[in-house]
Image (tube, rainbow over all chains, first blue to last red):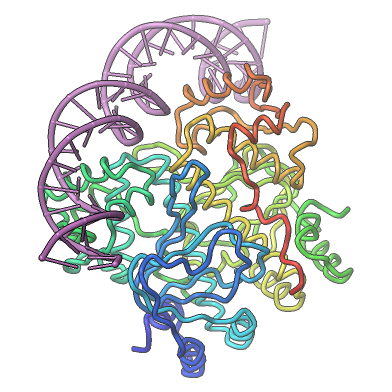
Length: 239
Length: 239
DNA sequence: GTCCTTTGTTGATCCTAATCAATAAAATCT
DNA sequence: AGATTTTATTGATTAGGATCAACAAAGGAC
């Protein structure tokens, strides 16, 4: 057990000892970041690749009318786009949701790792494809699911991403305010509150201020119509 | 002027002659595909990379209740994910919307191109990042824009992607039925029809059965609140 | 050419979720 | 500790878009 990032990549691909070492070195220096801190802002020239070692963050955008839309959550083990450095400017911002510990890998160092270690490259490409699948799944949710299904689906997704696909395990805490949830799902905090109340009444989740826990994962998956295939937790078997 | 794929990559990165040659060879054999044909289906093991040379296609998913959500449009020059072959199974389907001509590049050939030609690799990574930006922009639209804004925003996006960023150019035809539009924007065909009527009444677009044309791009952009930065049409300048 | 299916169009009604509003309860600040 | 801000909660009302329905028009199939 190294760190959450190496764990996650190692889940996709069996990494060699040299690869684990290289990743360990690449993420050995990290910064503590306080909550609600922008790691990078829309319009900025992209810098290094960020790796979340502890804590949560979100990708988001604020529209001219002031409303905010969250487009992704980053949890421990997640990295932002590996080739991000190729872009002229960021099209969105990234901000911490909780206190966090973040490692950075420079663009040249990242390129070197991808070049030199096939296992790392493969694992990171799979991670990127899984992230894209997640974006598509959010589009499906926003377009074709009711509000309570959307809420349940997002919670399921986070649960599976954090727990490694085990929907049967015990409770799991998500450190989101209802405002965060609203801005991720394209709803109002008032309506989120009502949908959460409904799930709580059915003993599917429990709520504390600023966080919630899953009590009954299978009931939650049933409300959501959750199918986890888009998270691609099983890599392709060797042809 | 080779084909739309090479044009598009060449827009991101100045390709060497050898790179253009390699891409020309890689896309020299192509198939004609009739409209409404699945190129690949959800659950399938991913095959080669598809390159759209002519015609349009869409990524979509059908939910258990029968409703469909479209998550992306592919137009001439677009390719599906370059590392798609790494996944165990597709999490969505891809289907042609019009008659199309499609080239395929095998996984091993793709890897070879990325390995050998830095310009191709860079251009394709930028294209992939732009696709991700597009997915995020769709999430923003679905979450935080009104229905008429959503319609206008999608048309703007397609216009800019097809025209190379020139929002001032003349009319441009989009070969979508209103049903396609509805399934892309998470709305009903009835409501799409009303929003299109509104745009038509204002002389912003014109409609024919099965397609529409943009008459007044700047008025359209104004309705949409369109900011094209997410399409990343300008690559990073050399540091 | 005729039949049949798909797509487009409009009107009437309903319902989900937004908005408006007021209060409570934490959390953060100084 | 007290003041201020943020977050959660509930009720009342409104509105945007869905649903239901009916028909027209175009395109494909045979």
